[in-house]
Amino acid sequence: MNIASITNNKNINLTTARKAILNILLDSKKPLSYEDLKDSLDMDKATFYRNIIKFEEANIISSFESNDKKRYFEIQKTKHSHFICTSCSQIECIHENLNFNLTGYRIDNILIKGICPDCLLKKEKNYD
Amino acid sequence: MNIASITNNKNINLTTARKAILNILLDSKKPLSYEDLKDSLDMDKATFYRNIIKFEEANIISSFESNDKKRYFEIQKTKHSHFICTSCSQIECIHENLNFNLTGYRIDNILIKGICPDCLLKKEKNYD
DNA sequence: CTCTATGCAAAAACTTTGCAGGGAT
DNA sequence: ATCCCTGCAAAGTTTTTGCATAGAG
Image (tube, rainbow over all chains, first blue to last red; front, side):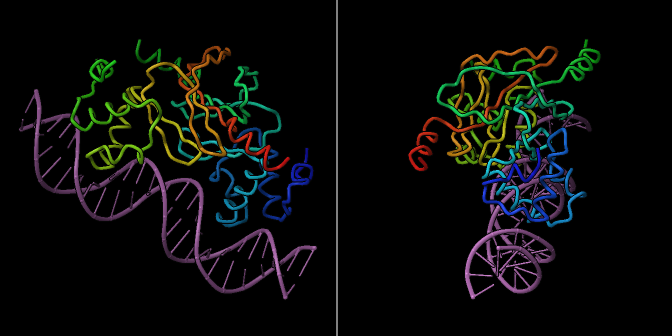
């Protein structure tokens, strides 16, 4: 998987800025926020966000808001869902198949919020 | 279901402002944003948001960000998930049981993003 | 040349914080 | 008397917009 194949037939010029964004997201194992990305990116935030809008319109990347109120971006290399711990704000990719039938809907991504096993254990220790 | 039973044993004084917020959310069939609520609420936004933080800490209400970048609040009367259409931004409550086993996790709510049947049909008509 | 992409600065949208006054116990 | 709650104004955070310049085809 490479950025040329991703942007193929999508009407997206692969500028230096766009390549930089896509390459980092492609290499990353987890979704990244603008804050995570900005030090590695040599571009203005306006350019970043404008390109993000383009990528999302073209269904090249997807984003979701995490517990820390920041938006996280990713290229979905394989179909997966996300678990967000509302206690420690950790984001986990869930590769288990979550199957349910919402007939007629196109499902793009699934966000599950709750408490992760680690935080659940800590809670038990503190309050029991 | 009433607000007194909801706040029972939760260390939350039921002030006028708090009753107002909870009553509206309790009556509503769908999640509401601050913008949806503000005209019906006679309080400053600071008071609103401070109380929301309290309610969330007490697990009385939950919130999620929708496609319009706004935060939507609700009291979960019955366990359900939400579907957000990234095309028309509509929020739907999904009462179907989504079953998968994430052992060790506490799951509080599930957000599904995609395209709703109406928007899918419109897309087909425009582009086929 | 024309169209698209970029940087910079300013603005926008939503939420939070500081502080001082009010109310309840 | 203390503690919690509130309003107002100001600040904070993330994202978007306007405008002028630079670059690609």
